[in-house]
Image (cartoon, rainbow, N blue to C red; front, side, top):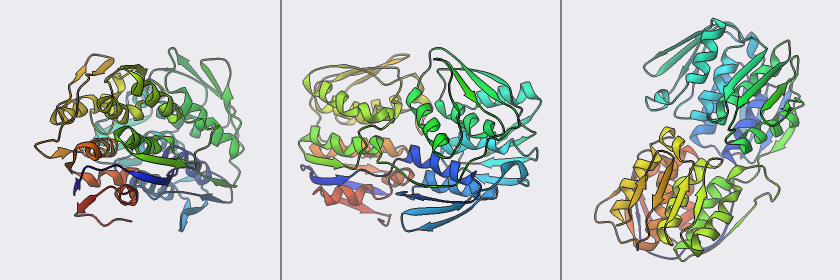
Amino acid sequence: MRAVIAPGAARGTVAAPPSKSMAHRLLICAGLAEGESLITHVDPSEDILATLDCLRALGAEAVWEKDAVRLRGCDPARADSAVLPCRESGSTLRFMIPLALLSGREMQLQGSETLMTRPLGIYEDICRAQGLRFEREGRALRVAGRLAPGRYCVPGNISSQFISGLLFALPLLAEDSRIELCPPVESRPYLDMTLEALRAFGVGADWSGEETLRVPGGSRYRAREAAVEGDYSNAAFFEALNCAGGGVTVTGLRQDSLQGDRVYREAFDRLRTGMATVDVTDCPDLAPVLFTVAALCHGGIFTGTRRLRFKESDRGTVMAGELAKFGITLRQEENRITVCPGEPRTPREPLDSHNDHRIAMALSVLCTRTGGEINGAEAVRKSLPDYWRRLKELGVEVQTDGMDQP
């Protein structure tokens, strides 16, 4: 799909989309709970649909009711052999692997070719140490065997999704476990979000010191009703429009949210005033929109960027190529990226999302200043299917082809 955007200031009010990160967590907890739960304010993005498909494969029942999902939970320890379709969702894949290791039966997790190239070494090491099966083959991962309770030592600078996956599964084992994180611990806000979801469903996992998580065994998830809070990650793209000359107000964000991406407003303010240095260690998903804001303002220096190469695309390399089309230079180092000051110009060739939802949205913000054409614009389905419609409602002239808008 192609999106053609004309220069123009976005204006108006937009409600923050539901948090994809918290929706994953609440849906998984509901899918593991005894009885029936109702999760409201859910957006049917591709990633969320993948998580629901996997829960169904494990035995849960899930039915959509407008923007809510009613779930009857399952016991993954009793699941038969199944295929878990993870689509292109890294979160889904990493959250589901430990749950797939509870029954002892062979489970196959499937996904796109790109998804299956993303790092999974932490789980592979755990399986090897416990004598469990872990085999990659093309677009499939086969696992088998029963995960054991006990002590887990993992690096703290890996994706929090690995640790969250263990946090979902370990409470269902008979005995207590603990997860010891070797410092430095990165993406702590995402772990706190997982703990918040667990507590909401009656599971008392918590921190025991700065680098240790205590997980009580023999726990039971309790069904409940819960609402997904607004998403700071996607709200950032709408507020970034203000850096391009717009006047957009975002509503529906919890001020006491645990989301790490809530720091975007402070980061935007700093980038507006000068060439600021911003650490994205705990908020890597903000990196593309922060690069865009830096390009619109005074440039910027970003640290903690090492993990960007393992997202839906190699986001540092991809943004370097796309920003170059606007005449903006992005320089990469091992764990640092610099967006050089400059005035964005209208691209002379089409832009490319590289099948990455956050790249597509970041480029669209720049295009409201310069105009431009984005190929692969359907990538927004991954997290925000109605993004282009929302942009049009803010007064941005967007022409799309090849995709129906929700």
